[in-house]
Image (cartoon, rainbow, N blue to C red; front, side, top):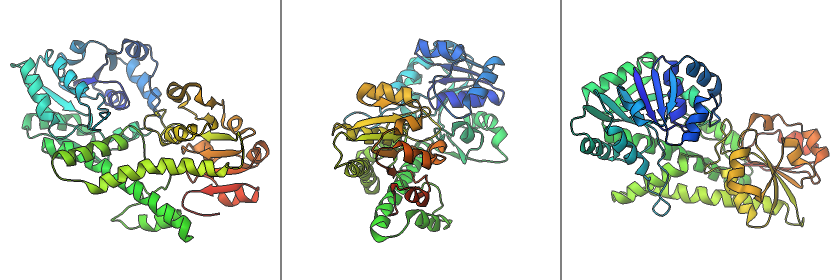
Length: 434
């Protein structure tokens, strides 16, 4: 099939690469000419684990191309996937749908045959109705169906999740659209649950899922605080909880709070929808507030560790919101750094992938190190904020020799606390006292 994808970000690009790898003819469209030029030259514009090889293979084979022309992407397509951003409104925090609606208006002009228009961006309930209305207004004779096709791709694991989905949700009541999507996802039919629901239910599923996972993260972080006071170990508590099949072990890793491009945005949008429909979502509201305060409290712990050290040097490992990606949007690490900078903290940071994106956001407010050990050189305190595997493999003896004061704040619970204390570190982790 020919598939047009509108948007080449952290959802659109991995989705396009994955579909091309299944043998489809994929044309990705984006308004930013420089981005399209880079992609057509074989240069990825985002980092995603495993993406580069598959991207190049399918681009070279001619199954994957990039353009700024909506007509080139949409004309003759069997499926058009909308994967543009829905950032939060700066005041209400509702999802900003201007890019969705603009894409719908523009693509409408180029529909030439029956086409399934699939909204993959995370959008509020009822968005599909409006997209359908826009397309119908701009092209009254077009033959199409608008469906909801929520994405469940974790950044850093997007390709894995594309090829090994927990479930595929298709939101439509149209038999014709359903048949097209069943054909698209036929390679997954024997190993993945394909759930067909109404469009409004599908639009709700992504928000409800992300809000629930965010609440789970906030819960285990609150439990970590309790464990520190009560003398328990949150890692052991989480392990015991996770063995209960009704709870499960995923998203029970205590840390610095949730972040990224989805959870903060989607919880705020879900809470807004609750208020809009006069159905308050109090658990989600509390989760949002608690997660915001979480980052402040983490910064306060860093400051407390160096309170008696004028001009203390703080080394930070990790800037991306999680490992496997270079994305710094709504990164808890970046938010903690921003809080520290309010107190004129001197920070040197390192991240294996996110340095360029962090620099665009922070400029010269912090220093950037070429590697993790250089970042820790002569530091008074080292703070681990992103769970990159190389941090877990750190040479603690080498760190002990490099640092001025051996204070190690392991906010991702990655290191061997006993070994660290044996080497003389003042070692702190989340959810357990040493």
